[in-house]
Amino acid sequence: MWLVYLRFDGNGEGKTYHVSADTKWHVDKILAMAQKHGLSKSEWLVEYAYFYARGTMKPKHVPNFHFYKWPEFEQKWHDVDG
Image (tube, rainbow, N blue to C red; front, side, top):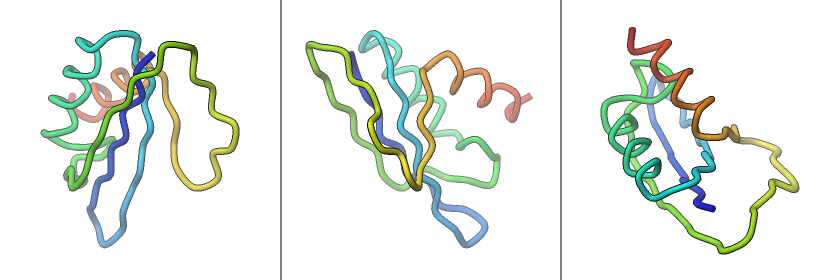
């Protein structure tokens, strides 16, 4: 299981997303999309990281950022991209 951390800036505010991915291929795809824009075309990527764990990662406390599974993030990104 992979976890991708993305931090975007835009419109004077920062946005942080965490996206779970099944494979490194999905991680690379998410990063390629994020380098174009975030979940709004006015967001640009300023920081990212990705992590791997052998077991399943489950969010336990998600107070101030968004958590997505990769298909959901990809769909939302394509909705914005057009």
